Image 1 (cartoon, helix red, strand yellow):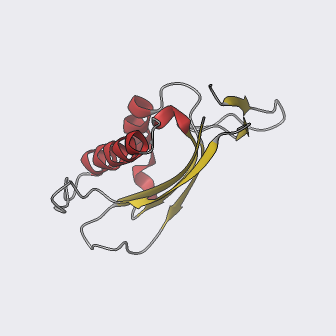
Image 2 (tube, helix red, strand yellow; image 1 turned 60 degrees about the vertical axis):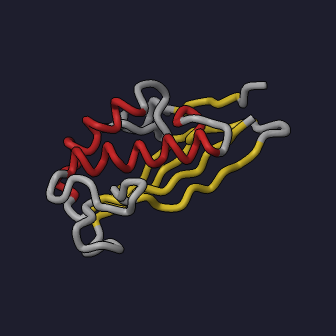
Length: 134
C-alpha cells in the first residue's frame, strides 16, 4: 500500500526558491509516522565528514537520513517535512544543490534556520525529518 501524498502550491504564494514544497498533505490510512532525530555529518564511525565543506556535510546528512529511512522500511521519498539548521544561511544555494540530488521530485515541506552553533563546532548543518510510511 502506498501512502497518498499531495503537494500543495497555492497560486497566491511565491514558488519555493529551493528544494521544498510549501505544504504536503498526507493520507496515511493505516500508515506509520516516523520522527527522525536531527543528523549532522557524522559517518558510521562517528567522525565528522566534510569539515569546512557545506556540500560534503549536506551530502552526508542526506545519506544518514536515507539509511535511517531504509532501516524504518521507507526511503527519502517518504519524508514529508524537514527542519534544517545551518551555521551560515548564505550557503543556501549550495545546500539546495545537494538536496536536489536527494529530493528530485515532490520535495518535503522545509524550514531552514541559521543558528550560532551545533552539537559539534565542526558541524555546519543538521537536519531532522518527519516521514509517513505505509
